[in-house]
Length: 215
Image (cartoon, rainbow, N blue to C red; front, side, top):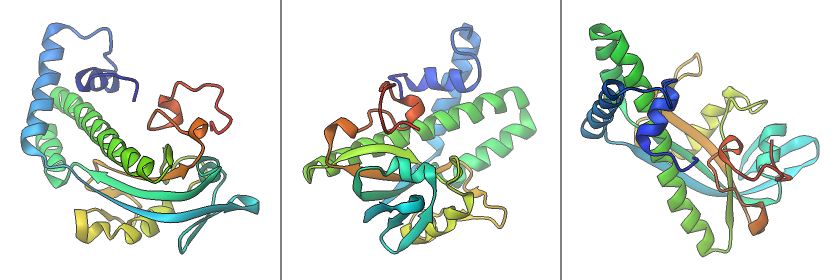
């Protein structure tokens, strides 16, 4: 992230950053309160060895993926964290109910849920950053199925390795949609080179514009 507060991220996702009046800000704050009180976010992670070979072939334990985007994210890494976080089914129920009652507020609640998930994921990343540094590693940015040529079809093997359906209630539809919808999955590279570490959760959120690993 960029140091934004949860409210600021919500307003940005709603397209109202810098233009929100008092009423809109109060509604956004109320949406965030609703999510805090009604949701129980959970997450899951798994460490495994990683390597990148010719042809952008990425090996993550017993899982092999061919992807330029993932290969860039794993450049210089010999370990990785597989990751998933979700706000849970309660968030989906809130969003569906709001859509039938007030579409204007539903748009803001949708933005608040996305912001809440992103900030929660960043707090999980902070924990993983500490775990990595205990072993002399530094985190790269998250790379998720659907990013570039890291195919959405790779959601299934990622979730399977995390045992996500049983552990945190995350499943995948035949159309490759994550359920609950407010869920994020990712592969996170671990490098021993501090200079190759990433300060943001993604390249878009990182200030290292001259990073040789940027994609």
